[in-house]
Image (tube, rainbow, N blue to C red; front, side, top):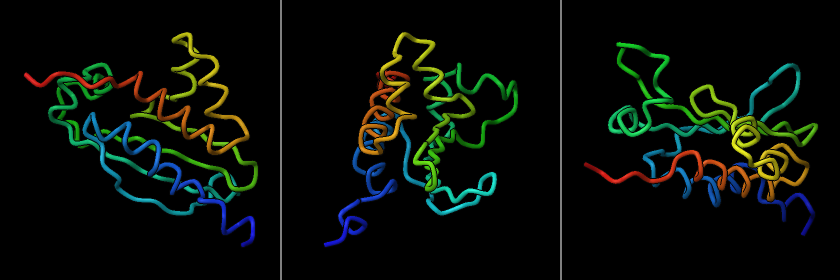
Length: 137
């Protein structure tokens, strides 16, 4: 078996580690694909959550919409296939930056670090801390 066939790839790792962390707060897999970002090939995965009850549970993430109806809450994960780096944003909030600002520098470093499996696990952990399950009213 070649190294490439043994590597589960970014989408499979996200499904294994990130999807369970975000499902508990209402996210579901939406789409995945290969895009070009700044001339580089990037795997991009989009998870979405419906606006209700998400916006009532996490009003700080939907505050930019004001009185407008929030169409959905997006979680984008981008993996640069050339550099091996990745970034994730939750409705415009950079997850690694959030981790750094909330005293989680090890998570922030792992999210953007060179090891994909470690990065995906760190991303799942950071998201679980950002979005702890909230009791339904």
